[in-house]
Each structure stands twice: as C-alpha cells, then as structure tokens.
Image (tube, rainbow over all chains, first blue to last red; front, side, top):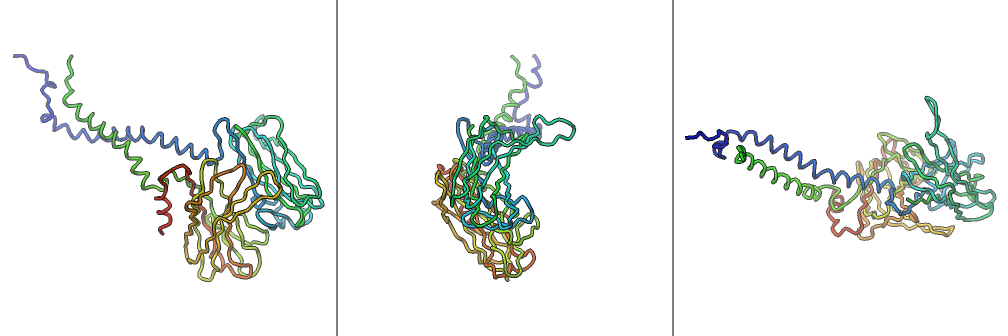
Length: 203
Length: 204
C-alpha cells in the first residue's frame, strides 16, 4: 500500500495544532486590508487640504483676497485704526506702509490685481511682489525680488476700485517663491484708506 | 497536480477575505463617529492669528492664544480672524475656544461676510452674533444651520470679530481673558446628511 503523502492526510481536524499560526496570518491580512482601504482616504484628505489651500482644478480660475485689517504695518510703531467694515488707515504721518502675505496656490497663472480703498488728497498704491530663490546663486543666496504688478489710484476719490492685469504670464511656484503685497496709503488720515486687495488667477 | 496544503490554507484565506471585507466597511463605521463625518472639513486658527483692529489695542500671547491686556480704559477691544471658505465648500459652523475670568466682561462674537464685485463700495452682512456668558474655559459655537455660507473666494470673504467688552471695561488682568483657537467647520453643500457633527459640537 502506497503511503500517502504526509501533507495529503492533513485535515482541518489534524491541523488544529497549527491554529496558533492563524492570528499572525489574520494580523497580516488586516494590515494589508487597512493599507489598501486607507490609501484612498489619505488621498481624499490630501485633496481636501489642497482645496483648503486654494488649489483649483485644471481649467478653473480663482482669487485670493486680503482685507485691510489683515495687513500689518511695515513699521512696528505705526498707529493704525479701523475705519469701518474691514478698512484700515494710519494716523502717524510718515508711516503709510502696510504689508500682507499672499497665500497663492502653486502652479497657477496670476491674472490681475484689484485694489479697493479711499484716497482724498494722495494716491494709494499697491504692489504685488515675488521673492524667489530660483536662479539665485552662491552658498547663501538672497531671494530675488520682482514686482509683478503695480497700480495707483486717483488722488481724489472717496471710494475706488482699480484693477490691473499682471503681464508676463506669471506662474506661481510656491516651492521657491513667496508672494506678498505692499500698500502705500500715500498719507495717514481717515480719508486715506486701505480696503481690500484681491489677486485673480487661473489654472 | 499535487496541492498538499490546500485543505489547510483555504480557511486562512477565507478568514483573510472576511477581514478584508470587514476592513473595507470599517472606514464608514469610523467616519460616522468622527468629526469628519459627512464630509465636514475643519480649518483651525490659533488665537494669535487674530488681527487687532487698532494699534491702541493691547494684547499678549501665551501658548498661541490672544489675550486682551487692557486693565483700564482704551482700545477698540476688537480682534478679527479671517475665515477662508474655498470654492465648492460651505461654512456651517464656527467654534471658538477661549477663557474668561469672572471679572471680565462678556465677549461678543460676530460673524461677518463681505462681498465685493466691480463697484468701489462693497457689502458687509452680519451673519450671526453670539454673546459668551460663560466664565472660565469656554467654547462658543456659532451654528449657521441651514443658512450656510457658500464659498465664493473670488467675490466674498468672511471673518469672525470678537469684542472684548467696551473700552471702559477692564479685561480682568494678565492672561485672564482671551481666545485660544477659532475653528471653522466647512462642508460640501451638496451632501444630504450632515447633522451629526453639528449635533456633536452643539452638545457641550
């Protein structure tokens, strides 16, 4: 009589002593399952984070806006105060500059710069800057500053909205560049006000 | 063909298949109990991210909180926290964590939305007002309910304003009256089921 192969005679009952190995297999399977099922969830989280950062799907457009109260005075001792509804103005005659960081999405084209405010006596100006390490050389390269847009209001307008296209097909690179706004109120008084600034972009 | 281990390997494989199926179901079960249930997306800001309305407003910071530092008269006592609502999402909730001493005035929270188009003058709408009467560590919830604000970043912007009493009131001393964090609850406005997270936050 041919002796059966040892493993062929292994039945479920006879294999019971091998069951302690099952938890290890189960854990392995569970880990595999979690890895498979959680990967899309992480991707979804990443998508949400992208949306929260203002990223836009291809072919769409968007805007980043900064209200007057979000600007910070360039000089630490600048006296500033609200006028109303998000506006800000300064009261010390020689300190009319305000800066704000601009949280633009990566790889979008900057299309235009819009400025709201009030100017009664002096023009209000706004500039959009980029500070990039692209092309900088040396062991400790300083960021290269570029003025991407520069607009100026009329000198006598109680409330204005001015817009200017950004030339040069500027594509944002948030890995190497930061973007900021500087507004010069021209003078400090309650009639020289910074309202809001908006930057339009497209993907 | 010799498959010597088939009787033994089949049950573990079935078990693994069951575990895979169970694990696939698990995220749905877990999501129902998590703050992110029903596609709520949370956006946090620390207290110190607030913008004081005037240079006359005195403040100090500790562990990222914004504390009103006025012990006497002065200042507007107003601080603003911008709230971004991306395109495709809606603002449904704002939850504010803070602390208030028994001698501090009741702070007033106001949620605003301002929209600007092509006109030089823009609109500002007061969406909600909430007075915090609790003392000690507090959590204040502004629930917009069905009046959620649809994100229009190309036209509109939102902010939370906190009024730390009037200019004649003391804030109550050093680090006794402040905002620790501002959390915005955003969600997909097209989702049908979204009440659980709001209920969870509305219940202290």
